[in-house]
Amino acid sequence: MPQNRSGSNERGRVERLLTELQKTSYRPFPEPRKRLEAPTRRGVYIIYSPEGKVVHVGGTPYARRGLRQRLRNHLAGKSSFVKKFPKLKRKGSKLRRGYGFRCLVVADPRLRALLECLAIGRLCPEHIGQGREE
Image 1 (cartoon, rainbow, N blue to C red):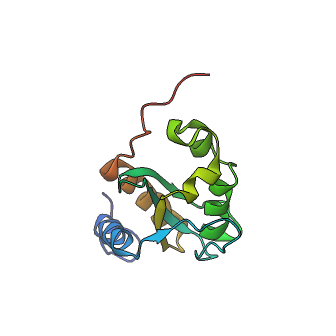
Image 2: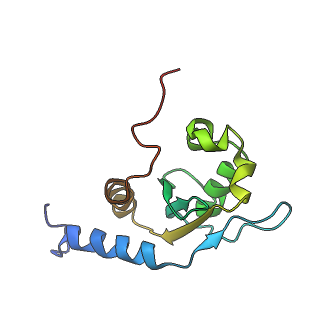
């Protein structure tokens, strides 16, 4: 992988970010009418099933209110993940039943995109490659 402008190894930075993301505190999705505790800055997140399996990795390239907004979109059923993940049956509210997440604020858009890609590749969420043509 090419060196970035500062001369440091970009691959190493992204690897360290993935390690950091995986070590962040696990947060369950809140019960109805409870506040979703997530940063309002942009970053990358991992969603886990009640069994602890990675079911989704995502980022916030456009979310003005950051990770909190994106995760709230999932709860509201306003994401392709919720619409396509068979166990949720198009109902984001099902995330409140034992699902949880980890998230990491990443300000730099390039590092954020690279981290999301690496996390998807390494963690291989179960829904990847199982989508159905509609």
